[in-house]
Image 1 (spheres, rainbow, N blue to C red):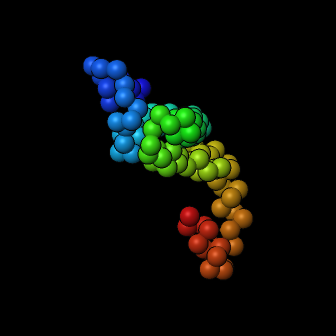
Image 2 (image 1 turned 135 degrees about the vertical axis):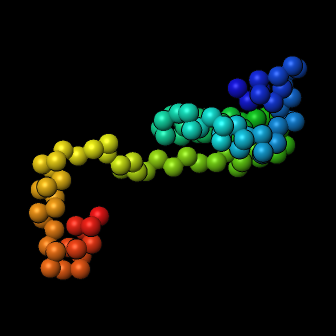
Image 3 (image 1 turned 90 degrees about the vertical axis):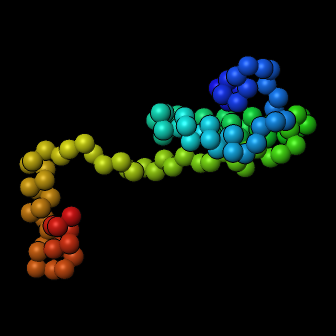
Length: 106
């Protein structure tokens, strides 16, 4: 895909790739993928660029220009909670304490 974006009408020249090309590619495409697939994409790109540098096909370390994709456990909110679950959670908050009031408000 980088090839078709950076070199649309000619044979690709990997030596002409620059870090902004790589970061731009990741920025344009990672948001279309799930966090796991985006992580796999950047891992593959880093490995590919390290291989190219090892082989001497590129001089610049483009692997360093591949940004990471955050994929933390529980980083997304649940779509909804059933009303009974919300009521159960709220009942467990001790509103006599500052922490309980904070938790109830959240």
